[in-house]
Amino acid sequence: MVHLGPIALIAAALIIAKVATELWLCRLNRKHVLAHAGAVPEAFKNIIDEPTYKKSVQYTLAKSKLDEFETIYGAAVLLIVVFCGLLAIAFTSFTNRFGSSAWSAAAFIFLTGIILWLPQLPVEWYAQFRLEDRFGFNTTTPKLWWLDRLKGLLLSCVLGYPLLVLVLKLVEWTGHSWWLWAWGTVLAFQLLMAVLAPVLIMPLFNKFTPLPEGSLRERLLGLAERTRFRARSIQVMDGSKRSRHSNAFFTGFGRFRKIVLFDTLVQQLVEPELEAVLAHEIGHFKKKHIPKMLLASALGSLAGFYFLSVLAQQPWFYSSFGFEPGNLAPALLLFGLLSGAVTFWFSPLAHWWSRRYEYQADSFAAQVMKEPQSLIGALRKLNEKNLSNLTPHPVYSGFYYSHPTLLEREQALAGG
Ligand SMILES: [Zn+2]
Image (cartoon, rainbow, N blue to C red; front, top):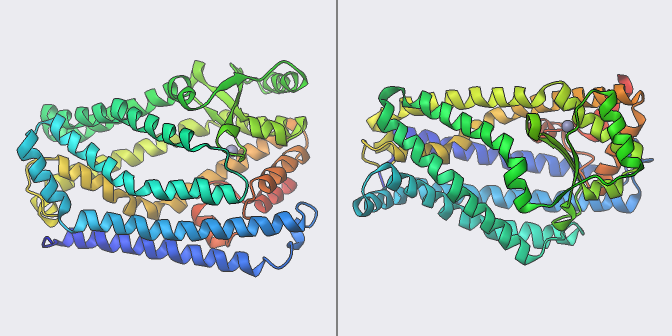
């Protein structure tokens, strides 16, 4: 056990406050769902039948229980690793053995990340093969599940580790202004990934095929033409390989941008509904939501790097957690491990922002479709097929939801 300094105590208090808030929100939401569980609420009478509604309540409750467990378990692992002095001891013996170069320090950070990831695996396994399976969503085989994780691990070795080395090298090369250089480097890496991921990384996990010739393709290309959206490609992704959940998304930049529809979505919706979903995605593009979000996250990480550079100069920051000052790597690692306890409190703001964009994209879709009904039909089916929680507590959805609830979106569409 190390003697914890004031900053470590503040960090521990933040983690505990986060856990308490998460558990409180979880319980609040569960109570709200249970209060409406008796019968299908009036607003959804024409949308969902009794058995499906009951099933969605059960699914919500089961997920909420697992969330609660994950919250406590994750925080316990983090508290043990950071606050019992284990990290500092491991770092000292690691650098004694392998030196304190950027390569070795980055390897330590990277290995710590992997070791902390391992305890999460059983929970992920349970979520996929017990919970999702029980509600008929799981289509992943154990082999595919392991392969996904292996690929993820290899990708982070190939991309994440060199980036980490580079950031630590920048500290050596550029002195006091290192944080600005590091920020620029990480930002450039993120932009590069945003461009390359749809072409190089996503195909490692899923198969993408252009939407086949036919009436649906004609209709969607017609929409692209009408909205002057240069559709490089509309692709169908084999989402059904892992899950029966359905979705659509928009990704990439410039020449590499593409609109992706899950094969499960194409099966569940009729043509006008799919057109409305695509119109919604084009709405995000036309309103420049992706560059705006990127800008906001770039500013956030600039503030983060600056804050880190200030902390990293304070000897008491290191000694608070049992480290010797002098090597920036522990500061980087601690920052990575603890930043979640700070950013958590900003997440309602980010989600509120994201929901504003969803309303804008919805309203764009209704405009180009010249009617809101197709989009409403699509949203209803998506909520039904995915067994979404139709009655979240307003505080819970306000805190966590990146998309407005079905009722909120319908009301906005009917009003606009
Ligand atoms: Zn959207």
